[in-house]
Image (cartoon, rainbow, N blue to C red; front, side, top):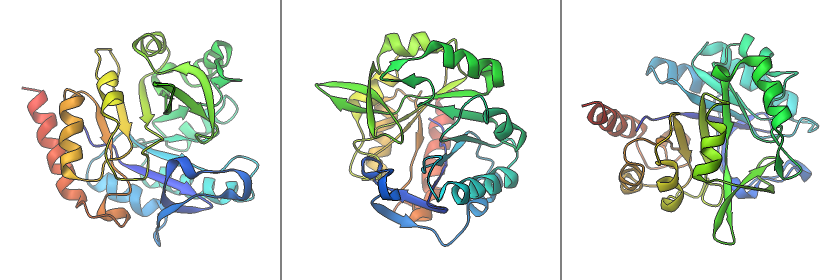
Amino acid sequence: MKFRPCIDIHNGKVKQIVGGSLKDAGNQAQENFVSEQDAAFYASLYKEKGLKGGHIILLNSADSEYFQATKAQAMLALDAYLGGLQIGGGVNPDNAADYLAAGASHVIVTSYVFKDGQINWENLEKLERAVGKEHLVLDLSCRKKDGQYYIVTDRWQNFTQVPVSEQTIAEFSSHCDEFLVHAVDVEGKASGIEVELVKLLAKKHPLPVTYAGGVGSFQDLETLRVAGENRVDVTVGSALDLFGGSMKWEDVLDICQKSENYSEK
C-alpha cells in the first residue's frame, strides 16, 4: 500500500473540498481547506520525500473564468517535480502531450473517455495514440446508485451507465498504465472509507490502483490496508495536517512504507 499524494486545485488555489459538492455553475465547492501556499510548494515537498505517482487535479471546467489560473498552478507544480506527478482535469488528445512535455509522468482521464454515459472506445484509442498507454491513467471515480458503483464524469457531477466492476477493470487494463478511483460519496468528508469499493479494487489485476476518499483516521488507513489486501494504494487529503487535518503526514508515510515493505517480503 503506497502513499500517493495529491494537489487539488480549484479557482486558482490549492484546496481540499467535499467531492460531491462541486458545481460548475458559479465555480462552487464546499471547502475544507484553502492553502496559502502555491502548488509548487506541495510538489517540492513530495519530491523531497521521494514520493512518486501523486496526482494534480484541475477542478475547474475549461470554460470557467478560473481555469487559466488553476492550470497555471498545475504547471508550477509540474515544473517543480519533473516526472514525479500525474495530472488530470479536462485532458484530451489536444492537450495531453503538452502536459507530458511540461513534466507530467502521466495524464489522468475520465470525461473524454466516458461520453454520453457510455465508454467511447474511439476516444480512448485517440488518447493512447497521443501519449501511449504507458502514460495514461484511467480515472474510474464513482458514486453508488441502486446498490452499485457507477463511474461519474464532469468533475463528478454526472453519472454514467458504466459500473466499476471486475469486468470493467479487466477490459480497461490493456489500455492504460494504472487506475485512480475517488469514492466521491465520501471524498473530502474524512468520515470513513468505502470498504466494499476497496475490496472490489483489490481483486487481482495487473495494474496499480489508487483509492481516494474518506480516510479520516489511522484506523481508516488500517481498514483500507486490510480490505485492499495491501495491494490498493491510498491518497489522503483533508485529514492530513498538510491540509488542516489531524493526521500527521509523516506518520501516514511511515505506515504506508511499512506496509509496502511487508508486502514485498
